[in-house]
Image (cartoon, rainbow, N blue to C red):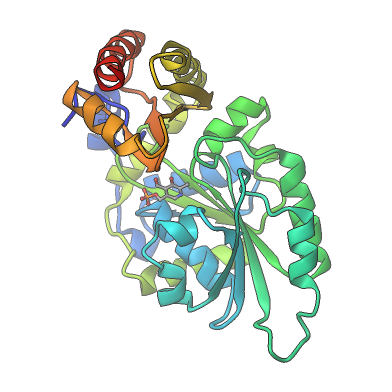
Length: 340
Ligand SMILES: Cc1ncc(COP(=O)(O)O)c(C=O)c1O
């Protein structure tokens, strides 16, 4: 494992304070609805997101899949970005579980362009066409903040045409900080919203799905169907509650460090870099991302090649300023040797 691990914000370890909160959590059997810590987390999350209710899930993956399962019937269409986590990184779960048909668009934004929506909705009463049911959005999307106007426009379109909207807001915390708006404003509009506690917030386990009370009642049944009913889950929910209390306000530090990382790397031989929230995206010479990432790993800096010439580096709770400076100097040496 690299000693400066910038592969993902999922790699954080619980802090001593978080571990204490977890050890001392009051618990009960959550499948019976009797775990007070899980209930507190669900209520707190719903309140933060301006939703009626929320459901604690073992993962953001499960929260997303439950949302799709509840919104679309087998054979209906789900409109989403081709690189959205929901369809690109959840093992084709939408086709296995909800058995829906993904219809995908590309481009730098997770929001479908209006002309795509207009073209796709035209002729949906044609007997040959599958029926659309759901549009999914993602914020942040590979670190990029989705403009809220795009979300509002998509939700307006969905309402006009009887579609639902799901927001994969696994990193919505980062988006809200970058936009300078309350979480509830960033979550406003979509029918269901996933948030994740075990990415930038630094909790060890869990995510939540937020929505209206009726949808969350159905989501609770769907979670059980998937084997996601948990018993004394207050132990892990306490880590998430602790993260909401202690780690939300510090996310801006990660964003500043990602910017410092990108400015240190940009201009090194063969590399350019841009920061988006807590991520730095590096552009390598064509087709060289895997080779550069390997050289960085050999120098003790973990990163992920996400496209043939793009490397992702993610800043998080366990990455102080000193690690950023250290990473930049190791990357400088490694890239000089490669470019050499
Ligand atoms: C945007 C997004 N959504 C959902 C997930 C799924 O999260 P998990 O694997 O923790 O369930 C991830 C994971 O990195 C993600 O980046």
